[in-house]
Image (cartoon, rainbow, N blue to C red; front, side, top):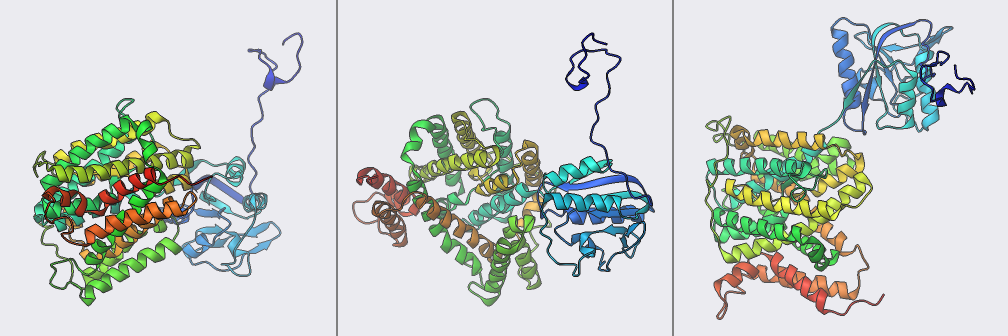
Length: 591
C-alpha cells in the first residue's frame, strides 16, 4: 500500500496495490420473486416506423414454436403495437405478489401499458423519467414466472430511456432492426429514367434490358467510389447515394429523338469531361451559379418533364389504347397511393411511397391484363454488360446541350454534399470533398457511357434520410449499392422491370417531377425574392420554355441546323444561359 493513500482507488495511479477495490458498475434490478427469467433479449431500432415491434413479435412467436417459454416486455410505451400483434385486449389483473401478465392464444406472456389503460389505443404522452420508471416496474413488479426468453421491445432511438433500461435489466443480447432506406430511395431513380429513354428512342426489348442493367451497375459503382475514394482527387468519402438523375431526362429525350442512343452516350462522355473540369476548378466556377440561377434551371427541368409524365399516364404515345380509361385508372390509382403515403405514411412506407405506389399500380395493371411477360422468359440469369455494345457517336450540338446539364448537376451536387454533411455530420464539406465528389461523378459517367449506362448524380432524397436518422456509416450505403450491383448483373430482373406499364410509370413519376419543380422554387426564394429576381427567373423561363414549345422557331433562314439542336430541343440550355447573363447584367439589389 502506498505510504500516503487517499483511499480514492478510481483516481489512483499506483499499480499492483493489494488494497485496491473493484469499481462498482451499474447494477441490474432484481426481478419479481415469482419470476425466473433465463435470457433477456433487447430489440432496438435507430428510428421509428421500421418494423421493430413486428420483429419482436415474430421472434417471440418463433421461439414459442420451438417449445420455449417466452415473454414480451413492451418498453415502447407510446404505441399499442405488441398487444395488437397478438390480438390481446384483456385488462391486466394482480395479486399480493404483483401484476399478472396477459397471455396470447399461444401462451406468450405480455406486459404492456396499453393493457392497463381504460382503452387500449389511448395515446400515452409520458416523458423520459416516467417511462423509465414504468419499465422498471414491469420488470420488478410483474409475476413473470418461468421464462426461457424475454424479448424487450425498446423505444426507438438512443434516448436516456434506452440507456437506463439496458443498465437496469440483465440484457444478454440485442437485435437491431433497420430498414434499407437508402436502397428504397435508389430503386425508382435508377430504373425509371432508362425505361423512359429506352421507350422514347425505340430500343429493342433485349437492348432495353441491357440499358437498365448498365444503369443499375454504374449507379452502384459510382456510389461505392464516392464512399471509398480511390485517392484524394477521386471520390468524396461522404455518405451519399448516386443514381440516374431525372434532371438529364429532358435533354436525353431531345437528343435521342433527333439522333440515337450512341449520340447520347457520346454526349455523356463530353459531359463527364466537363464535370471533371468543374470539379477541379470548383472554387472559382461555383461563384457564377447562385441559388437564384440554379433554382431557375431546376424549376425549368421540372416543368419540361410534365408532358412526359402525362404521355405515360395516358399509356404512352403510339399505344393502341393511348388516352384510354384503363390507362388513366391505373395512373391515377398509382398517383393516389404515392400521395397518401407521402403525406400520411411513416418510416419506410413514407420514404418508399413512389415504389409502393408503383407496386400497387403494377398489381392493378396485372389484373386488367396490361402486363406482358413475353420478354421475361428468354432473359438469362447472369450477364455482364459488354463494352461498346451500343456504340459511341459525337455530335457537337448534342455534346453542348448535355454539357450544360452536367454543369447544373455539378452545382446541385455541391448542395447535396453540403446538406449531407450539415445534417449528418454537423459541418460543411471541405473543398477536397466537393472536388473529389464532382470529379468522381464525371469519371464514372465517362466509363458508364462505354457500357451503356446513363448519367449518374447525387440523390437529394438521401440528404433527407441522413438528416433524419443521422446514419453515416458507409457500410449501410455500401450494402445498398451492392444490392443494386447484383441486380444489374441479372437480366431476368431487368426484363421484369421492362414489363411495368407506362401508365404506372407516369402515375408515379409525375409526383417526382412536381418535387423537382418545387425544389427549384424553394431555391429561387431562399433569399429575398425581389423585382430583380423576378426578372431573372421570368425572362429565363419564358425564353427557355417558350422556344421549345414552338416547333421550328430556330430553324428558319440564316440559322444553322445545330442551333435548333442546342437551343431549341430542350429548355435547359437557353434558361441557364439567360439566367447567368441576366444575373450579371441587371443592377444588384441595394441591401
